[in-house]
Image 1 (cartoon, rainbow, N blue to C red):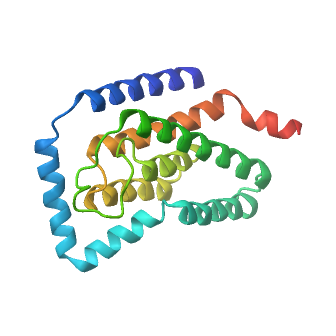
Image 2 (image 1 turned 90 degrees about the horizontal axis):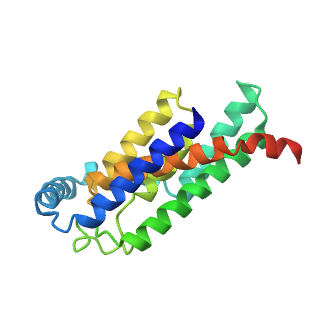
Length: 193
């Protein structure tokens, strides 16, 4: 089952990458995203909330979430904190490497890069959503992590940082990283150390 999920996620990722690369004209979706972005920009509170949600998936936010998960594992589930932390760190690292490789090779533009001065990298896939998805995929029964992943995906679209295909691609990248860690059975390797 693990290998099957890995193969399916890989095929979907390849399909999305090809689709992203072939799709030269983003006019309709770009108009939609820019319209959303202008509404968010004209509503300071909405902009601040979307920015805050988005920041939770940046490196510092993810470190805090890893700390919360570690405490949860230790106190509630009585799990092995070392294994949890190492496994999640490896999963996150793989997700970020895959996302970086795809971003630099596909060079997909962002929807409103002309409006955003702070965004300098490419759009596909969303690194923020990849980070969220890689954590959520490890705890798929946790509805809070699912809600967080969805909120981050929506915030990235609302802020004009990504197209819908970018956040879907980010989700698949995070899931793919999780599948790679599970197939390789990292937990056995860590326990043997």
